[in-house]
Amino acid sequence: MKLQPLAILLALNLVTSLASAGSLNGRAGAMPALYDDELLTVNFTQLPDNAAASLLAHNSSINFIFESDEGLPGGQPFIAVIDAIQGDGFNPLWVEVQIHFTAGHTPRQLGSDDEIADAVANGEITLEVTDEVYRCSVIGPK
Image (cartoon, rainbow, N blue to C red; front, side, top):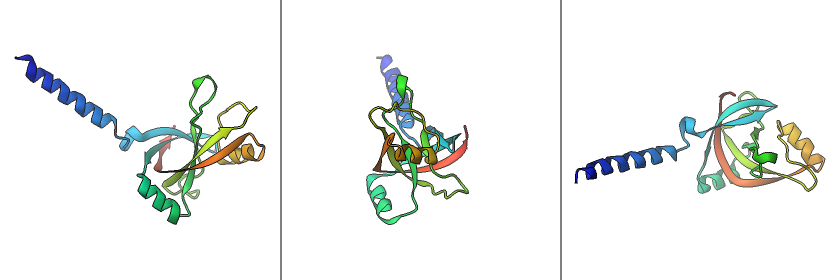
């Protein structure tokens, strides 16, 4: 019988830990991103579908964040590439664009929107604009 209060306390601690671990607000949403080959840290939070749809329909100044969910050889993650920072056309709203490497081209890390444009022009990659919109702010260097 004396174990029951201990079990309840442990369960409450577990629930609290899981709830706070699931939130991507604040530093928990921080991730690396590249801008003109410079490694930065960004805070990244996905907006609800209804808000994303409204923003895509009515806001023409949304930035792009380029991702490749397919990853890189050896299971390495692809580091996101952003097309603007503060002072260079920055808007805290970003639409995700997926990069797909075409047949015969080994996936590689791209470091800038210019490099991505060149890879599209050379047929190395294709781009898929998604309907996912994120609030993304640059919070520091690497």
